Length: 237
Image: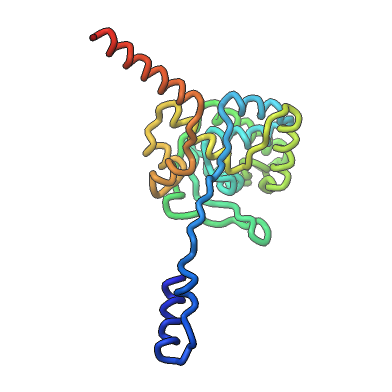
């Protein structure tokens, strides 16, 4: 922007009788560096949070978010036709621009298939049976989280805040459940490339720069490694 505008003013000064190119005197934009703050839940914190969620459908929603790392809109858009055995096919995204609309995923790499654990598979199958009994229609392709209609983001946030208040834990955003999942996997030794693919990122650097958080447990492992190396060095002397 600066270069283009500067060239325009310089051309006006040289050929169109502009009195001065003041932009040159002002100089380029000053870069503003901000430390971005990202929050997330550890597994223990999540277990505390989820103990405060009373409604089972919302409990499954937050559990799915934490243990899959899908985007909130992707999670809300899921139907049972997207669940095949223990794999979930991410093909849609629920947008909230001017009202909720079913849309395509964020980008090409967001189309993906992710594996889910046995507990989630069993609980989601029970949830499907609940919808069939509730609505008396076996053929309808229910939304996994909501049934006939998907859960509303405003209600999800209200349930989340109520649970946080109940168990006295700080709230995090829905998107930060995604941060939590990525950090959880990396801390458990899952290769960053696998984590990046699971999140639907086109670049591993995105996963590293934004979604992986250094925590106290990692510091303890670093300290333990350094102490071990130091001890081995001293024994050799």
